[in-house]
Image 1 (cartoon, helix red, strand yellow):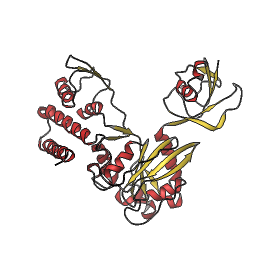
Image 2 (cartoon, one colour):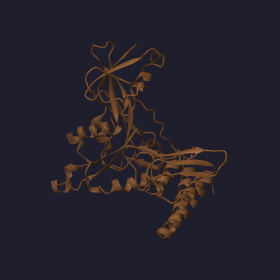
Image 3 (cartoon, helix red, strand yellow):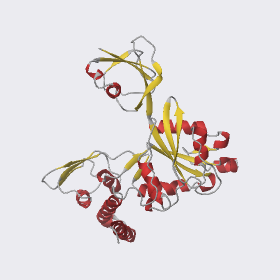
Image 4 (cartoon, rainbow, N blue to C red):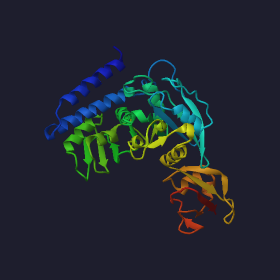
Length: 364
């Protein structure tokens, strides 16, 4: 029995103990420690030696463009059709399972931004445990900037099922990382700084020990809804990715059935371009990208042909560093124009956050 098989056996035992242990106030502490043990074992399983998913041909993807997006769905739900509709790719389209046996890349250009779209092999239930193309697909998902979950109108429930699969695999969709800071120490055991006190301190300490911490100060900066959130904050293998959900083949059902599509989920019939523009806009918003236009002269016209692509929340200082680290030493003033400026030509600090279609002039 190799190391991976041993870890999987231990995982099965812990999962069974969690299932067999009734959850109530008296068992809350024990459940927390078991979940921490399970998380640590899964972290071991997803370590560098196991991240490739085993033998066979791996998916070594060369990322290009300003961001990468992966299409994840059951076999034959229309990923290839969507890829062909929004990019310059030519992905083989068929009406049988596993048409796409590799990863097909395409480039979607939208609002001046180049977004790489990756059509992944059809993923099946149980992918988190390595079934089908599971592990290889998950490795590509982890390296992406946004994931698109796709199913057809006949299998809407799959969205929830694969969401749970992703959760089990340590992928957190449309979630932000916990506000938990760990400061490791040479001595002093484990100290918890928790102003919210929603979970017993002894439980937090024992969970931290189970996760491999010995001497550390753990600062909690949010009200913890569950021990799972605390474990996420201590784990090194969690991945936080924005999500867009799509239901395809909406042409095959009556209008009353279409009403079953959950709110926020995009209904799509790519062959007739129905929902395609809505899809592009959802991807754009999910990525949180903004375009920044530079001015050569303060009263001049900005260069809108080649925008700088930044992330919402980044500062103008980061824009300057992206242009040139040497140039940043000579710049002392910055002026902005655009929809979110208080007035056109407003002088702001270098800590000012960027917004979409911001126009910027740097001065000495």
